[in-house]
Each structure stands twice: as C-alpha cells, then as structure tokens.
Image (tube, rainbow, N blue to C red; front, side, top):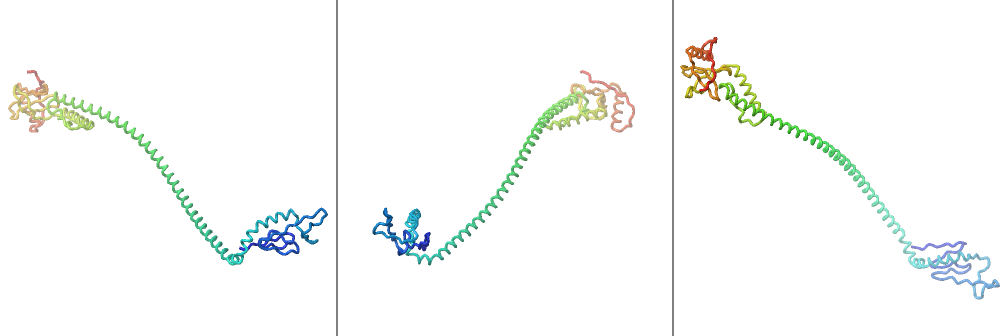
Length: 317
C-alpha cells in the first residue's frame, strides 16, 4: 500500500520516500535515503564556523527539543517508506479487491456467528426444557417414592396386625380343637352308657378343621338331646342268657327300653351294662301282653292307649 505523506509543523514541505529530516529553506528536497547535512555550531563571537551553511535571516528554525524527536521518528519510518516505495501502483490497484474480500469475509464470519448464536439459543432452550422436564419427573418420582414408603409402612403395620390376629386365631383354633375332642370323648362315653339309638353315630372322624369338627360334635349332642325326648324302635343285637339275639328294641327316650323277637314270641325288658345290651325276658303273661301292645301302638297298628309297662335295670349275672 502507498505510504501516506507526513506534514511537519511550521509549514515545512512534505517528506517523501525515506527522508530522515525536514529540508531547510531554499534547499532542494532530499529523496531516497539521503541524510540531512549536519548543522554547525556558532563560535564564541556569534558567527558560524567556516565551511558551514548558514540559513538566511527570516527563515523559521525548529527548536532543538523538537528536532531530535522528529529526527528519530523519521529514522524509524525510513525502512517502511523504502519498502513500500516500489509497490505503490500495484497496491493502489488491489485495494478495492482486498477491501471487498475483507468485507465479504467479515460478512461470512458474522453470518456464521449469527447461525452459531441461533443454534446455541435453540440448544439452550432445548436444554432448559429438558431440565424442566427432568425436574418435574424427579418431583413426581420423589412423590411416588414418598407414597411408596408410606404404603410400605401401612402394609407393614397391617401385616403385624394380621400376624397378631393369626396367632390369636391359631390359639383359638387350638382351643376349639381341644373342646371338640373332649366333646367327642364325652359323647362316646355317653353312647356306651345309653340305650342304643340315643346317641347318634360319630360322623366327624374324617374332619380335620377344628371349627367343623366342633360343629359336628355340637350337632351330634343336640341330636342326642332330641332323641332322649321321644321314643323309637331300633334293631339291635342283645345278650339273652348266653347267646346273642337280634331283637326289636322299643326305647322310651333314654329312660327305659323293651324288646321283642322278630317273630314276636318272646318279649322282655332291656338295659345297658358295660356298653352291651342286656335282655331280660318278661316274668308274667301280663308283662308280655303289655309289651306287645306297646310295639303295636309304636308301629301304628293300634290306637294310642294307656299301658303299664315293667321297668328294670341291668343286673349282674
């Protein structure tokens, strides 16, 4: 590029090329790398030394304090002026192209920077939205975790309550099983001491649940209570003397019983001893007739009537 001219103070002419000092008044302009001729000092008489150039009067001369810095500046700019001197025409021709290229490059950089800013703004907005979503999800998960912990505590409390209730239920079941077993034993003892048909047979032998077992025993006891309040005819095997005989047994509740053979020829009274039915024959014809009439009334062959029946207990042989 072309080196700009420098204008000195005090109306001095322009420096060209590599001039290192301002020209004097009336002297030609120095070009290239020419140096200024040294100035001579005046003698004691005030006249300049011989052989030195004295500027004419009326010419403006710079003070020494200004000339020295100005000379240094000229010396510093001299190499650049020399280097730029030969390419002045070429640089002047390429300045617009260079300026246009610099402007185009600056425009491209600004466009790219605007794109980057827009991309960063979109990325920032996306990250902020993502952060907001993550925070919302974290809050939801935190609330769900709190609820899960609360539910866990509630379930743990309910589990402990159910465990305690289960232990109480197991204790109650054990008590019920014990009561059912004792009831069965009592009914078995009552059946061994009662007339046949008073205590119903045991149907709870295959039941393992304590509650159902107790319910079966209670039903059996209630049925035995009902049978003691009414009469009935049972077909039993009894001991008559030394032999076993199958007879019909007329039972009046659990108080007394009478028997009659299947052919109706023999009758008598019956009692239970050691779980066995002991048969005793009637002692008189009147007892035999009364027993036969009682069987006829029970079978529905004779209308009801008052009858006097014999009553005996089991006797030891």
